[in-house]
Amino acid sequence: MVKDGIYYALGLTAGGVAVSYLTSPFYGIPLYLLAVFCLYFFRDPDRSVPAGPLAVSPADGKVVAIRRDSPQATRISIFMNLFDVHVNRSPIAGKISQVRYQRGQFMAANRELASSRNEQNMITVDAGDTSVRFSQIAGLIARRIVCYKRAGDEVSKGERVGLIKFGSRVDVFLGPEWELAVEEGARVSAGSSVLAKKK
Image (cartoon, rainbow, N blue to C red; front, side, top):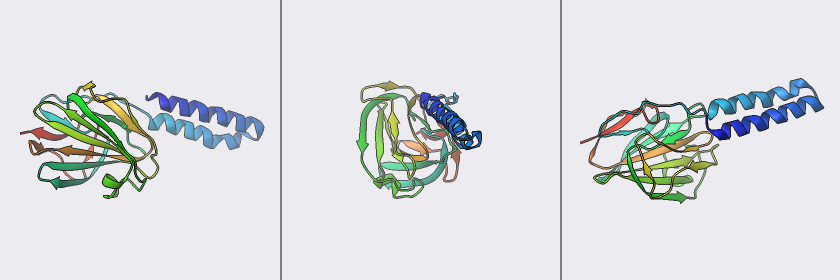
């Protein structure tokens, strides 16, 4: 459980108690339901991370696009709906060489333009013979991107690196040294689903 969920749930529960006390218990029910939803939304299950020269998914969700943005980069876009786990994980092990924040819009995260125009946090992990960049992208509802790591930090494959609150998207950029192992429309799980294999 991400601690933010506990804080939100406690605040909503306190609000429900206050509303119930001042008016009627019936009017407190929506706040109690929202408290339960926050506990569900901020869940953070353990994952079994596969071994080997593999790139794993940094997010739970649906692969909505696979695009060759350039001869040197293939982009895999993963859309997280409101009911997916929103904790993000590192696709590979290595050293974080860059964390760059970009201001932008808040259009629906399942739209193609969200990759370039939405507010996002771009993280590059360098493993020596390869590097993988992935972007935490805010959506229409998500207005808060959280990143636990900084440039210079070492990360293991599948390690938690942050989260995006309430519906969003993560794009992964892979070089030509990677062979894709996923297709559009697939459902993936952060840290455990394989996106690509090292050639």
